[in-house]
Length: 128
Image (tube, rainbow, N blue to C red; front, side, top):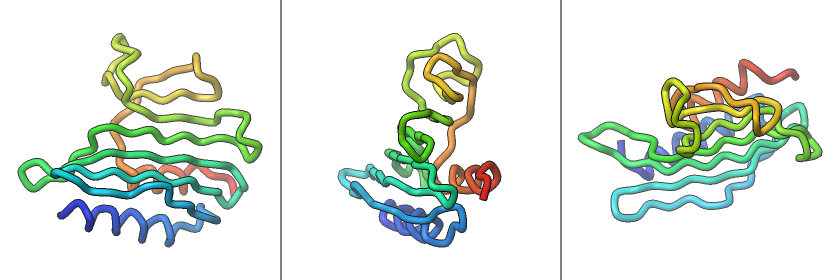
């Protein structure tokens, strides 16, 4: 899969999701073998989600390098969840992948997810 093809599959999945009401693409680019995609979403329950992911292809395989997927309430004041791989919780299992739940200080181990996998997760968790 080429980097541009991955971005296109992300946009198709975002547009096809019943959990997403609107999409604002902030940035999408590929350069020197790396890609980046960032968007703001309004979910079907009016919650807000901002997604950002950098990625590459290594030996023909898609690899997520860095990500931040933030889910806020509709007022954008209350954190519901934020998945990221910033290296600030080295003692957690599966470091650096973690999720903040409800507040910044409530952190649990997570796994690496790409945007397409995150959309599947949102569709399972969202209340319509």
